[in-house]
Image (cartoon, rainbow over all chains, first blue to last red; front, side):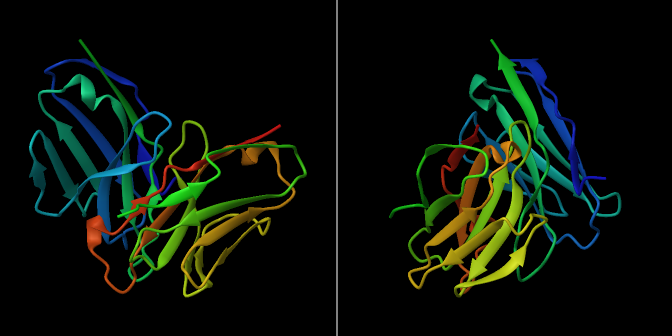
Length: 111
Length: 116
């Protein structure tokens, strides 16, 4: 079983749609959680951290359920520029800070 | 303020050859991590260097080795290249002394290695 599992997609949605991505992780000792965005053939870039209380950044909302070891990302009012691969990332070890990435979920927003 | 610099950007090698990839961390960062990203997959952690020593290693064979220099720059070496080593190799730097959580990592744009 992979440490971080995501639905690979692709998710094809029209502009303005709301789309949700889910992710599960296997290591209950994981300490920190993130969503990264990766454009085609580019490096990953931090989109947002995920906190237990849930957090929002503009059109993006992230949720964490430690009991279920489940992370989600909600994108409201999708824009063409949101088209990318979204990577679910966990940091399992404190003090060493190596990131464990999921395989990513591809989003294609269509006009 | 320069970010993470990786070289070369692209590289083509033949099976069995050896390759060295280079990374200069962001100014002020002292820790370098290397990741391998195969096509259609997420990045996989190779190893992390701090104070010129390998501090943590992922599930990669000994053909993958590295080095960190006193100026914090780093090299990734891969020996006896296999076709399956074809991937985007990403370097990420961070500061161990001043970890800033979610802002802590800066990724370079990567080296795309093709093994033929």
